[in-house]
Length: 236
Ligand code: FPP
Figure (spheres, rainbow, N blue to C red):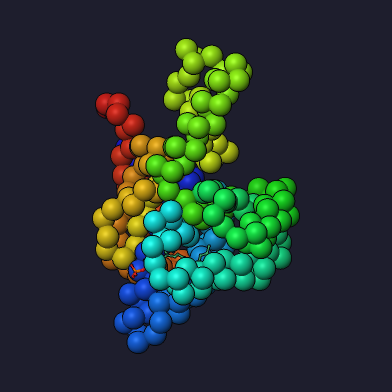
């Protein structure tokens, strides 16, 4: 049995730093090249039948990078939103952000809110950007919100099951990912969509993110279609 194309693809965009270093450039040069690939990959989605794309832009662990790299990435995110907003709107892309916004600066969170509102009527492609996101952090925040509902008497603990918890996750508006891609040769999940990827297929590829072209994306999706997804069941 072969699968249909994946409806929801999630990507761990790794290898920007190594890509830049291999060219004798600072790491931020690689992040800028990576941002251009994001644009290309989002644009490729409709033709490839991908309705939902979720990308890991900044993890809860990425704060441990040098102060100048963190500041450079935050400035890149602000500029990306400002520059791309008009095209994303025109191209039918609905943008949403997941992750904990509390640690992000006000200017960035304002731009994030505005972009979410601006694109809220779009439905051609759903782009979700994980920013200050960690799977365990998300589960911790979700559990806190759920516990508050129980404490307030609005939720009966006896009725809590996995669908209840899923409603409290940052991703409550998203279907689970069908395929998770990680670039740059690392075979780790790194705290990305831990709960949501329970039945996802994984593709670990050596390509560094700044070399992740629409063609590479299309090849991965073609190979996904030959996989047999059984979700734990036995098929004839
Ligand atoms: C991992 O590569 C990449 C990141 C932590 C940042 C990802 C950000 C982008 C691709 C920029 C654009 C994103 C948006 C949403 C505009 P790395 O630095 O860990 O690479 P390395 O493993 O080679 O050091």
